[in-house]
Amino acid sequence: MAVVVSQLIQALEPSATLAMAAKAKELKAAGRTIYDLSLGEPDFATPEHICEAAIDAMRKGHTHYTVASGIPELKRAVVRQYHERYGLEYPPENVVISNGAKHAIHNVFACLLNPGDEMIIPAPYWVSYAELVKLTGAVPVVVNTPQSNGFKLTAEAFRAAITPKTKALLLCSPSNPTGTMYSKEELQALADVILDTDLAVVADEIYDRLVYTDRPYASFPTVRPGLKDRTVIVNGVSKTYAMTGWRIGWAIAPNKAFAKAMGDLQSQETSNPCSISQHAAIAAIQGPQDCVETMRQEFDKRRRYVASRLEAIAGLSCPTMEGAFYAFVNLTQHLGKTYAGVRVDHDTQWCLELLGQKGVASVMGSAFGAPGYVRFSFATSMENLAAAMDAIEEFINSAE
Ligand code: PMP
Ligand code: GLU
Image 1 (cartoon, protein in one colour):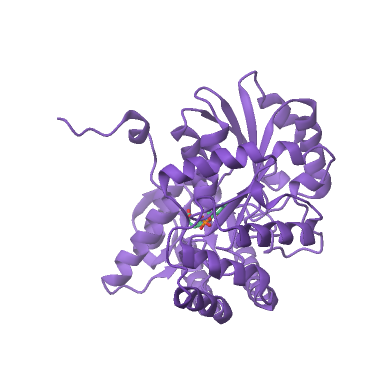
Image 2 (cartoon, helix red, strand yellow; image 1 turned 90 degrees about the vertical axis):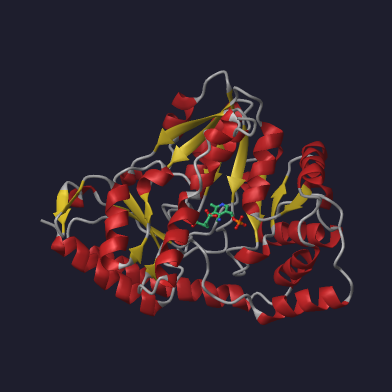
C-alpha cells in the first residue's frame, strides 16, 4: 500500500472532548434529547460589537493575507492587555497570533522541543497537551496530582520528575479539566524549582478571566523575578469572549527569536490566522469589557448550582471549582456496579452508559489522564444543567 499513515500520526489519539461532543451532536440529529455537558465552549453568542467589527473589517477590505504572525494592531492590543492586567511588559514583536490557542500551543511545542526531550505535564491534563508533545518526537512525562491537593503539582513532585532530558513544564491554571487554580504561593514554589534549573514553562492562561474566587489571578511570569525570560504564555479570545469558532489565540514569547521561529513555522503551515477574526479580536480586547463580567457571573451562578447538586449525590466528590467551567468528579464509588443491567467498571463505560441511558454527554477522566473521574462542563444553560443533573442523579441511584 502506497498511502500509509506515518508512525507519529498513527500514535496520535484523536481529541476525546471533540469526539464526545460529536457523539452528542449525532444523537441529537437522530432525534434524541441530549444534555450536552461534554464540550468546554461558552454557549453565549459572541457579543454584538465584536461581530460588527468583523463585518466592518470585511467591508473595509481586510479580506486578504496578513503578516503570517498576525497583524501588528492585534499584537499591540494583546501586550497592552497583559500590561494593564498583570504589569507585564512585552514588545508586540514577541506575540504570535494563531488559529486558536490550540494552534498556539502546537507552535510553542514545535519550536521548543527536540526529539527525545521531556515535557512535564501534571495530570489531570487537558486532552491535547500530551498528544501535541508527542507530535514533536518529544516525550510527555505525566505527573499525577492528588485530588486532596486540588490536583495541583507540588514543588516536591515537580522536582522528582525532572531528569537531564527535561526541557519544560506545562502549567494550566485555572485548569481544564479540574477547575482548580494555583495560588500565588503555590506558583512561587514551582517557580523556585524552575529558577534552580534551566527549564522553560508553557503557561496556558486561557481561563484567566474566568475566576470565581476572591484570590486574584496570578499570571505565572509575575510571581518571581526572572521567570519572564523562561515562560511562554498562551491565551486567546475563545473562552473570554465566547469566540471559539473565530479561531484566534496567541503565544507571548520571552524573546523575539522564539517569536520569530513560531511566525516562520506558521508562515509555512497556515500563512496567517483569519484576517476578519483578527479584527474581531481587536474589538474584543479593546472594546467594552462588561460582556466578560456578565458571562463570568452567569458561569458562576451555574457553577454554584452544579456544585450544590453534585454535593447532594452520595459518593461523588470534586474539588472546589475556582475557575474555568468544569466540574471534575470522582466516580470511583460508583464504578464496579450495574446500571440497567450493564456492569460498568471503567469511567469510559460510565460516560457511554450515561449518554446511552440518560442522554447526558460528558467526558471520561481517562482522556485527561485520570481514570475513575468524569468531567462535566457547565458552559451550558441552567435549564440544560438542571435536566442533566436530574438525569445524572437518577442514573447513579439506579446502580446496583
Ligand atoms: N487550552 C485549554 C486549557 C483549553 O481548554 C482550550 C479549549 N479548547 C484551549 C487551550 C484551546 O483553545 P482554542 O479554542 O482557542 O484553540
Ligand atoms: N477546551 C474545550 C474542552 O476541553 C474545547 C474542546 C477542545 O478544544 O478540546 O472541551
